[in-house]
Image 1 (cartoon, helix red, strand yellow):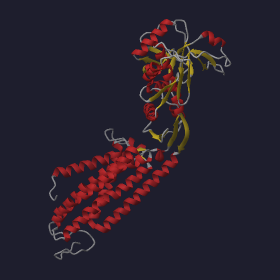
Image 2 (cartoon, rainbow, N blue to C red; image 1 turned 30 degrees about the horizontal axis):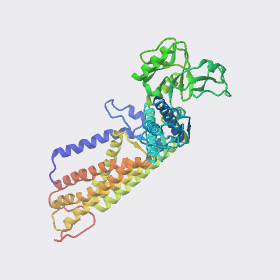
Image 3 (cartoon, helix red, strand yellow; image 1 turned 135 degrees about the vertical axis):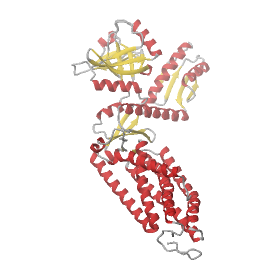
Image 4 (cartoon, rainbow, N blue to C red; image 1 turned 60 degrees about the vertical axis):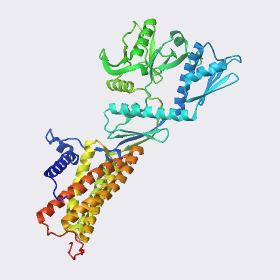
Length: 537
């Protein structure tokens, strides 16, 4: 303990120097950062929504609509399977909770049940009773379905927001069907909210020209048809087209989407995967001179005429786009459609001035806390307290450097975590110093007391920091928003406080002891008598 290697001094010096270089840009203004050399670190700490302002949006997933879509898929799949088996239901009734198939009295119910169960899967309860088969989600299946829908929605939103170039957007599930999204530094949230709210379900359908010409809302369409609106350029009212309900291809078959230009106008160029390219090529070859509609979120955005077969899986979507809207549509298609419709139920905007006030108050609280702790340590432990005060300043620098390198987001609760870190760092040194005092009281020399004090205090220090680390890790894993910010800074602070509180202060104390000589007294201000009567301070 009293004879550390020179490499240890060098390592600590380089660590502190690196931390200072990484943390310095965060303390400078934008103009001052521009004057730094090109090789100098330029990244700054990311400020959260509560510090730099931005937008908070709370979204609610429409699970009932998602279940209706689920039942429609199972209904179509079961109908196709039953046709292949040579059995046709008299009626199929769908509801919010499931499907009801009605068959003739002489129908082979056991075979029918197995066919429907094969389509539905293990998460569904399929029950037959006197020519009626009912399909519903089991309790486990319903939980699994809702969990999968929310996870897919979270993943899709994260991909979309990351591709918009936003810095550190936060997407977190809240409760059973809520998602909170935060955009730090966003002043105009309208475009971002549009990207969030659009389901982006893309499909290609053939147009029924005959029914389209005679269609009005009072006409009842066959089950295999549907009517959707398309706004024509220059018209105030949209016109309706009647489409085949069955899609030629869907957005799930896309492999890429990007913006391009055609005749000087922005368009979206798409490419289908192998399955989609085959189906699209076959559909266009069989329907030359027919129109097909490109449908996005139940609205027709274009309805071109098929002039030739389109092999190869490449297509272009045009519809009077601007460069920005074409880019947004390409982004939505690349990220995939949302599995569930999301509705904005709450929106809050935090102004930059409010964020500036939070930063100022947080800085004041941190500075006051730091000065008070430093003063107490100096009063109680004299020269050793001065070493601790210096270590606390280095600890703050290193902590900011770690936050910058990890690109973690600093929030107002995160500042609270930094202040708590100061207390943890001081607690480490108090344990060590009190143990050194006890060893001196036991009759050991100062050199032996320093060595034994650091050695025996380490077990307690590690136990205390491990329990805090485990608690912080649990908060980080299961917490959301502000709780995560608090846990992040606390975990990083534990690492830096151990380094400064144990390694740095030890090196400073050892260097002082070796320069002063073996007859030096313990520099703790409170006078205490040892066993052999020596004065410790």
